[in-house]
Image 1: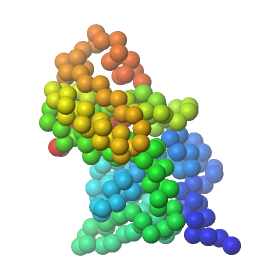
Image 2: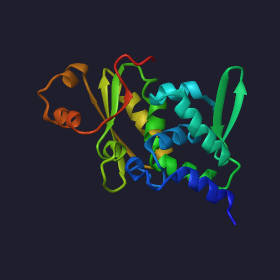
Image 3: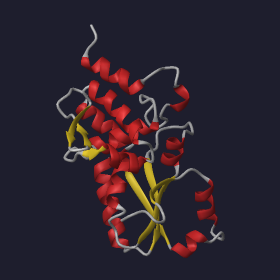
Amino acid sequence: MTTAVDASLRVLQGSVQNMQARSRLLPLLRSPLLGELLAWIYLHPEESSSVAELARRFKVSQSTVSREADRLAEAGLIQTERRGNMRLLRADLTGPLARPLTELLALTYGPSAVLADLLPALPGVAEAYIYGSWAARYSGEPGPPPHDVDVLVVGDVDDDDLADAARDAERRLGREVNVHRVSVASWRSADDPFLTSVRSRPTYAIVEPGDPR
């Protein structure tokens, strides 16, 4: 007999023929976008996020988010409601997968959701990127699961504020978060071998130039 858990897992996995797009951070998931959506929703369980907001955050169309929301709601993983013209999504914490799924998401796609909460709020952050093994897995490069998270912060940010943010992120993610701060001038320069190496490898943008704050 098909159970609710079986149905939910089928929605997360999707077609086995679509292996090329499958997440490298959490191979259970059929796409990185699904991981990002679920991580944002499940790691902000007290909030409802609109389809429009999520589409802007992950740079996809609203119709793409709506289709994913339909599947996730049918599987009992999220709740949806209409408020005027907005469709709001939030985690369904009543199901048997809620707790283990939250833990899995924190360990895999959690850095993108948690750091997007913490870093844009700090004064002086001009840009911020995840680099290293987490960014490589996110981009689709094969390899072992990342054990820590490497973050490059560009700007004039108070070191104590960054240290507090790193500790908060470590508490929420259950893994080490390493923050490296550089000036805007250094980041723009081509002279630093370390920064040249960072730029040559996959990165995931948390704060990009011109992002609304």
